[in-house]
Image (cartoon, rainbow, N blue to C red; front, side, top):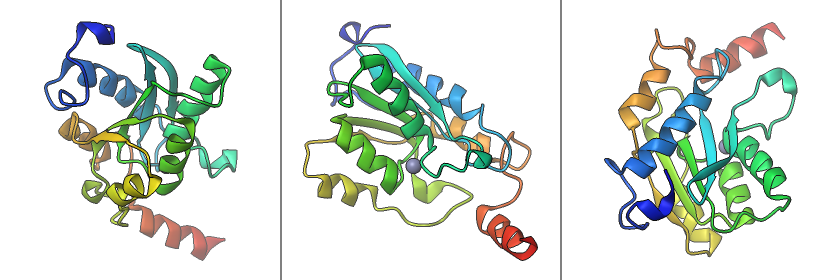
Length: 179
Ligand SMILES: [Zn+2]
């Protein structure tokens, strides 16, 4: 599936857009690779209808706080492009990006961010991230669209789904108490 066969963005980004759903499913495949007790988030970077970088949140034992799905996908895309810039690319991520990932996305020159779940709807972390404000503060003309395959993605967070059994805030307390 290549971009030129599909209606042009941004007006046509969104639910029931086969282009967006196709690549969000690629991001969901990544989210399903995340180990238990970590946020099941996956991301892909797309250029001209082709995935050039895939990523999912890595194990905590990598001891690398930057190993978020979006950044892992961007690292791979940059390697693939042999460039630190990714102009003309679109990133698909299963959840609204955090502050760190948003900054990295802006730095690369990616100007289209398509996400699944709004962070306020994540069942495990209620911390507010003003993504809209981050985009505004970036000072670039960034196109964003959220809610793609949202219900499908939210299933990954269900108790008998593949991931979280303990809400994040409880897990942190538990770890602190036994350290
Ligand atoms: Zn992040």
